[in-house]
Image (cartoon, rainbow, N blue to C red):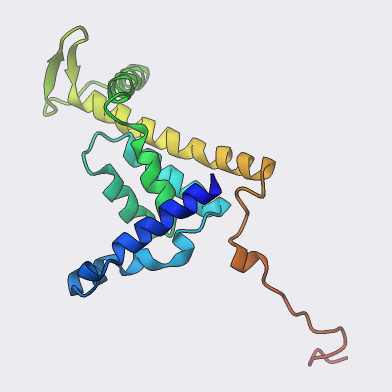
Length: 191
C-alpha cells in the first residue's frame, strides 16, 4: 500500500511540474506552494488535517471538491494527496444516501432548536420525499461536514497509535534529527 501511495504521489508531482506547464508564470505562481515536499509526505498530524479537509469538502455538493480541498490543504499545510483522495467519498453511487442523511440531519437540528426555515431560501419538491427547504439542506450539509471533519482527528490518532510504522508522528526528516545537548557545567550559567 505504501508503494502504491508513493507511486501515485510521484506521478501527480511530475504531472504538475510538466515542462509544458512549468515555463508559464501564472502556473508557477499558482503551484509554488504545492511543491513543498512535507505536504506530500504522510505523518500523523498532516494526514489528520488533510482527511478532515477532504471530508468537509467531500460532503459539500459541489463539482470541483478536489480542487477546493487541495487549495485549503495547501493553505493550512496539510497532506494534499489525502485531502484530494478523500473527497471521492461522495461519488455518483454515494451521493443520494449522503444527501438524504444530510437532509435528515438538517431537519432534526432545525426541529430540535425550534428554528423556522428562512423565507428567502427556496423550497423544492423531491419525488418520494416531499417539499424540501434549501436552508434545511444547507444546515445538514454544513453540520455533516463539520462532524465528519472533527471525528477524523481521533480516528487518525488512534490508527497512528496502533500502527505507528504506517503513519509516523513526524516525517522521517524531523524524526531522525539529532539534538545536541551541551554538557552540564559548560556555558554561561554562572557555575
